[in-house]
Structure formats: structure tokens, C-alpha cells
Length: 334
Image (tube, rainbow, N blue to C red; front, top):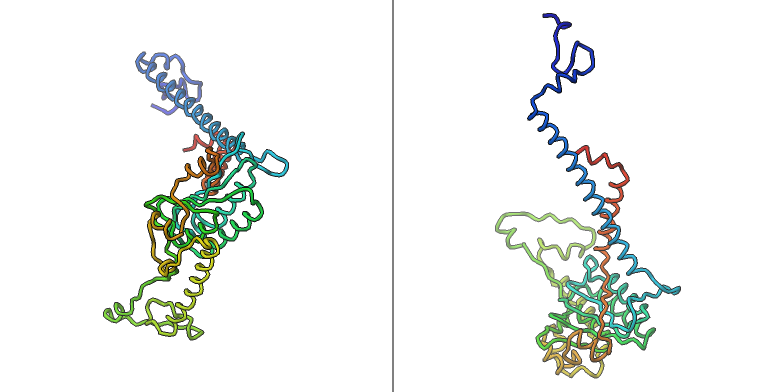
């Protein structure tokens, strides 16, 4: 049989239009199955589009709500978070360092926002930190003192939860008063630098250290080289200088409230109950207690800056917008 004489079940003669009569001759169950599959696919695509529109709308609404909360409502940039006075809360959690949430930029920005709000009656620094960078803590301490002098009518209290040690206490002493729980850990007024030495291990393994420097003390912190007495003494002198800065800051902040006890600046820690006796803190109490009983502004508003969360939200929103306007059909290529 020649090619010209062959017929396709869906076509008539070669090159002619589809043979609808042959298609109609399919069994009823086959036609029904094809129709159901096509209808199901259409419904699934329509449902996907509806959910996509819903979630995109929800994202826009959420971002708009954030902008409304953060948007200044006064010509001077002041922020109002509701009627009536409130206590401003700023959380200082975790290690205080440049690359953590408890860095100077975040804490200082939170402080400035709290002071700028016209309804702020008092500010609580709620601290739960083992310490960290003396530089970051010093920045925060200095800014608290500056803002207090500029806004003498707004008191600043530190409230310690689990722990307020080292750099955390460095910040706390800038507050007008310090409160803690009886079981809180307070103190650690000292400075340390730690590391590891692998000289003995290298000797046992037969590993030779080849260190080339320009400057006789350039490699003095190298963990694979023996420690020299003069280098160790230099580090102790440097740490002693930072320790004295810490001591001076504590004395400046606490003044006559500190008891004359030689152990205060040795790096030891105490419970909240012991700290009251030593003058490291003023009294026992929680954030809600200070807001309600001391500031007489029971409503607490959290001013803690959450820059990373907001940035991630905006970034995700940008991706959503890009996907929305880059062509809906693109989703059909997956």
C-alpha cells in the first residue's frame, strides 16, 4: 500500500482536516475519561492561580501593616504607638558583638526610637547576656549616658533576667537603677583572652612549624608557636588596661552604692540576692514590676530593633513582586 493511500484514524485523506466523525466514534468511556482529565487539569490550574493571588495579597497587607506601625505621625519624626503613656522595652539578648543582634547599632537605634516616642514614660533595658565585646558595650554605655543627659525626664532602668555578666553589666551600669531576680547571675567584672596551644601535639606528630614574619612580635598569638614571656606580659598589660576602663565605668555608674569589697572586680559572679548586698544592683524585681510600680506605666511597648527580620521580609517581598510581574506564564514552564 502506498503512502498516499494510508489513512490516519484522526485524519481523513493525507493532508486533509481532522476527521471528527472518527473522533466521535470513540467509545463513550474514553471520551468521558479525556473530558474528566481535561476538566481536572483546568480546575487545578485555576486553584493554583487563586492561592497564588491570595498569598501575594496577604504579603502586601502584612508589609503595609508594618509600615503603618513604623511610620512617624508627627512633623518632627516622632512616633506614636497608641494613646496614653507606656514603658519602652529594649531587649539585649545573647553575646554582645558587632555580628550579633545585640550589637551597638541595633541597641542605640532602639534607644533613640524609644526616646523619640512622645508617649514613653520610662525605658527598661532587659538584659540577658553573658557579655561580649568591650567596644560594643562601651558604645552603648556612652550613648545611654548622652541620651539621659539630653532627656532627664525619662528614666532608664536595667532589668536583669537570667544573666548579666561582663559586657552586659558594662551596659547595665549606665542605667539609673538596676533590678534583677533573686536567682539572676550578676557581675564578672573582668577581661579575658583565651585560645589553644598545639606545640606539644606538633612535636609528637613530628610536624615542623614554618612561620615567617616581618616584626619580631608579629606572630606572638600563633597557637603553633611557644609562648614567649615578654609577649604574655604584653597581653596581660593590655587586658589590665581594658579591665581598669571597665572598673572606672562601673564606679562611675554605681558610685557610693558599691560596697567596699575586694572581690567585686576579680571577675566573680553573684546571685541577684547577693548583688543587692554588694551594691551591684538596687533591688529585686521584673520588667512588669518596674513598669507598673516604678514608672506607673503598665503598658509595655517593645522597641527592640529587629532589622534582620524586616530585611528578610522585604527581600522576600521583592522576590514575590518580581515573580508577579515577570510573567505569569513563567510558572507554567516548571
